[in-house]
Structures are given as structure tokens and as C-alpha cells.
Length: 117
Length: 117
DNA sequence: ACTTTAAATGCAACAACGTTGCATTTAAAG
DNA sequence: CTTTAAATGCAACGTTGTTGCATTTAAAGT
Image 1 (cartoon, rainbow over the protein chains, first blue to last red):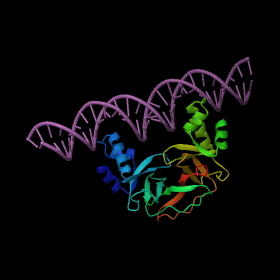
Image 2 (cartoon, rainbow over the protein chains, first blue to last red; image 1 turned 45 degrees about the vertical axis):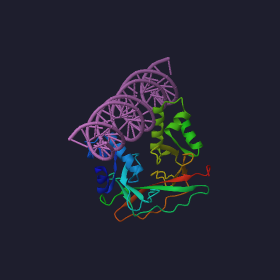
Image 3 (tube, rainbow over the protein chains, first blue to last red; image 1 turned 90 degrees about the vertical axis):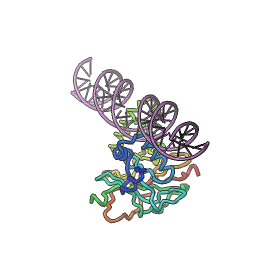
Image 4 (cartoon, helix red, strand yellow; image 1 turned 180 degrees about the vertical axis):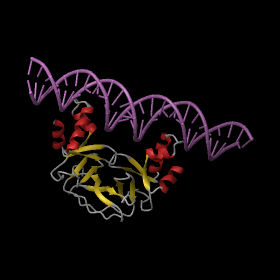
């Protein structure tokens, strides 16, 4: 699929709207289904930004085969509003109050990205 | 407002739908406006869960007066699906790739909460 | 090459979430 | 008691996402 190529080629996470305008000839419902299939197949993962916008990014090498746990940090640039996967910045260990058991962590950092600074 | 009392009383973050059913006599648009005003006034802060559902929680003591930066971790229980503010679990220091400047961090931990374990 | 079957696409409709404009009610100030 | 402003409710609209159904496309079988 060309959608997968687009997601792999660009270094950022793309929203449904962005993909829709890229593939203007494709129906938006088809896009929804394609992305849903990709996500269930473990090829892409969904990122919900601080604005509530859901974006999609390809799963890279450090995405475990089975669990598809995203052990990396996501970055949201407040200038260009793009969302990146910082694949090499892993989730830190957190010490929670007693009684809370961790199964997953999602970290979204906001700031100025490499290209805008 | 009774909405503020409800948010302060319960120890968790409440979604718009939950608040709507609590105050069934209040119009949902009024609820939207009240929550928006509270947020702009710095009384509550918005939390967007991993499911994309936005919830609201009161800002406690450690919310800085000016910036309203939420320097604490949010917890989403995979059993009861509630969202809590872990006020005493602060955001860790993250070391990002060169060129990325941090202005804010949002951490959402998933697992089993104190009441469900 | 033709038929059959299944998968992929497009369309229509619907539901949830959120916002805006306008009229009405409520409450505060004069 | 009147005037003004704030708060509420209603209607309408836009966006996002899902589902059902018909149609097209492609693959498999004969």
C-alpha cells in the first residue's frame, strides 16, 4: 500500500486528515479501514496528541513483535505542530504509589523540534 | 458551582459524559462552557486518555499559579477504566536528542489501580 | 478464456463529540 | 421597579469515526 510507504517515508506521525489530502483520490472510509487494519496487524501505532488529534506512525525496529508496546517517547512540536517518534528515547522507570501496577506508559513531550529550533 | 464540587469530591478525572449523567438536568452545552471556563481559569485541567476520551480533573496544590503546568503523572486503570491524577508522582527528567527543546511533558500510565488490585 | 468467489472500494447513513449563534431566563446593579 | 449583564437552553452545524449495503476489482477454479 502507498499509505504505508507514505508513513514510512515521512519521518513523522500523520493524521487522518493529512493522509486524506495526500491521497485525495481515496475515499476517507477506505483510509479508516486501511489504517485500522495496519494497526491491528502491528504495522503502525496510533498516537493521540495533546490536542486530541489521532495520528499514525509506522512501528520501527524496537517495537516488540508480540506486545507492540511502544517503548519510546513521542514529541509534539509547538511550532510546526508535527508529531515525531523519538525511537531512541525510551520510557523511564516510574515509581508509583503502592497499589498501582504498571502495564504501559505513554509519554508525549511538547516543545520545539530539531527543524524549528 | 456544583460541577467543581463534584470534580473536587471524586478522586478521579471525569469525562464530559460522566458529568452529564451526574447533572442530568443541566444542558450539555452549558457543561461544555462551564468546563471551558474552568480550564481557562486554571481550576481544572484536561486529560486526553489513550482512548481519546477527554476528562477533567481539578488542579491541586502543586499546579503552578501562572503556567498551570501539570507536573504529575496520570494513571488509567485498564480494569475500571478510571483516570486518576498521581499528584505526588512527578515527571522525570528526559534526555532528548540534540535539537529538541522541552516545554512540557505529559505522561499517562496504564495498569491496575489501587482499588482494583 | 470464462465463470465463480472473495476481497477491496465507494456511498449513504448514522452516532459521538464539540462549537457557535441566537433567544430566553436568571440574577445582579441602578 | 427598571435596566443590564451574565448564565442557560435550543437549534444548527462541523468534524471524527463507525456500520451496512451495493459495486467494483482482483484472485481462484474449471
